[in-house]
Length: 94
Image (cartoon, rainbow, N blue to C red; front, top):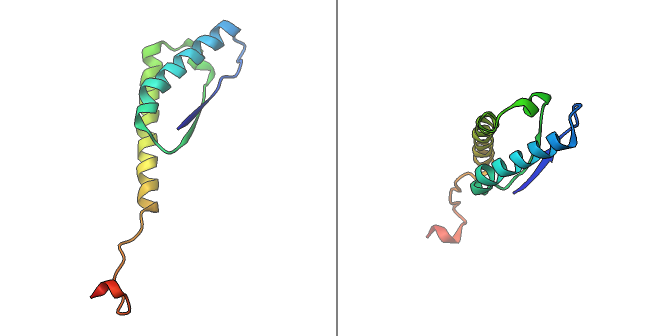
């Protein structure tokens, strides 16, 4: 899994941007990487994320992880092959 962060300035200082990036990297490390999904994830923050506490960010992150698991489960169901039915000419049918 690859994780990308998009942290726009939103009229914030470099210190604030770096702080939010560190928080998001930590949340990604402890919440996303253990899932071991075959996916690339891009996280783009909104301006209100700069004012959020770490527990608030973690809560939002957990909601996103639940949705990601839902999407991944739906995608896996779509990709799973249908059970094959043996044909009369199939040699393994005997």
